[in-house]
Image 1 (cartoon, one colour):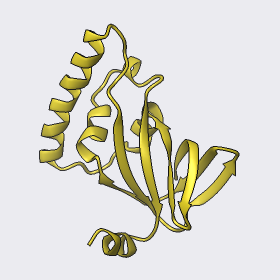
Image 2 (spheres, rainbow, N blue to C red):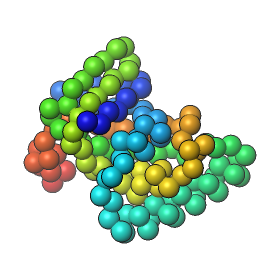
Image 3 (cartoon, rainbow, N blue to C red):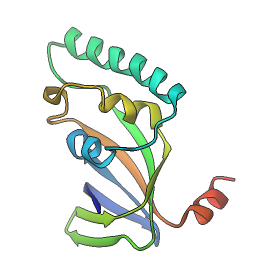
Length: 133
């Protein structure tokens, strides 16, 4: 089982949430994700850009990243105010794949206090494909 926490989570529709997820938790969630070689090549470029941005600003902050994820409809949801915890087995990265892959290439110090804006769909793969058709 994988878990993701969205902060400042807002339910847009019955199956769509928007919120912010921490880099560290996303990296943990993506462990073993089957990134294609082309995506990993782009990820290396993004990683260099992230480091250049942070070093230029003398921080470990990263420019803002947006991603769209799909998790299985069987996902368990637990919401407490603006914090949504989701536990699931199956997920896909629909948009933002190379930037998320770049996060897996960063040293741990870069993962703290950085967040990704996430559009999260709780749908089966076929329904998601129809939405993006």
